[in-house]
Image (cartoon, rainbow, N blue to C red; front, top):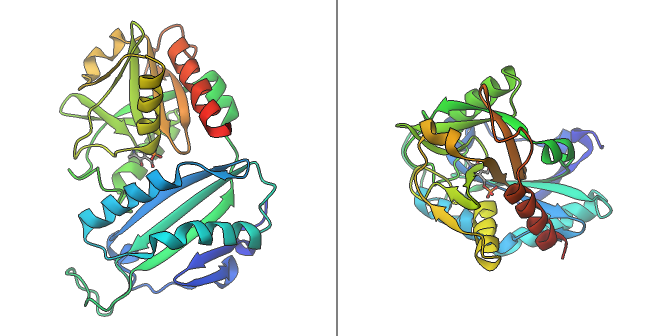
Length: 287
Ligand SMILES: Cc1ncc(COP(=O)(O)O)c(C=O)c1O
C-alpha cells in the first residue's frame, strides 16, 4: 500500500498530496470536534449506496446547523481521487469525508460569521476487508454509554467511542457495545442486532443511536426475504436469551459476534441468520 504521505487527498477545494496537507489549528473540528463525518465503501469499482450516505450526511449537517451545500460534488471528488491515486484496480476502497464549521480566529464557542466557509476534507484509501473476522466472528465487550444524547448526529466528537474501543482492544475484543440505563444502544462504530427464534431484533431509531446505512439496508433485505424483524429495546441482562448477535456497519458489514465479555454466544460460531444476511448483503453489493 502507498505511504499516506504519497496519497492525494481533497482539502478545501484542492487535491493535495499527503505530505503537503496543511490545516489551520483554528478549524473548529480541531478545536471543538465541531464537525460531521461520513464513511463509505467502494467495492470492485462501485460506490455502495452513495445516495443514502449523502442523505445521512445532510441530516447530521442540518441538525448541527452547518451550512454545507456541495453535495453534488462528492461523487466527482471521489472519482477524481481514485484516478489521481491510480486506485481503479483496487478491490476495496474506504472513503472518509468530513465537513467542519470552518476555521475562524479568535477561538470562540459560538458560531463564526456567516461568510466563514465550512471546511471539507475527503480521503480515499485502499481497504483490507476483515475476512477472518467476518468468517469466524468476534468478541465484544459491554461498556456504559457515556456519550451525549444526540448520537443520531454523526459528529467528529468521538472521545467516548475512542476510549471504549481502546478498552475493547486491551481486553482482546474487537468492538465495545454501549449500554445506556440497562439497554443496548450500539457499538462504537457499528449498529447492533440479535436473533431469537429466527427473528432479528435491533434497537429502534432514536436520538441515542445512529441511523446507520448498513442497518437500513439489512432491514430492507429482511423485509424482502420475509425475515421477521422487531425494532425494540434490548435489555443488556437479557442478552443471553439470544441465539445470535451481529454488528452492522460500513467497515464491519455483517459482523458475527461470538463472545460478549465472558459469555459465548450460541455455539461460539456465526449463526444461520447472520450468515444468510452476510450472503444477501454480499449479493446486493456485488450484483
Ligand atoms: C456509532 C455508530 N453506529 C453505527 C454505525 C454504522 O453506520 P453505517 O452503517 O452507516 O456505517 C457507525 C458507523 O460509523 C457508527 O459510528
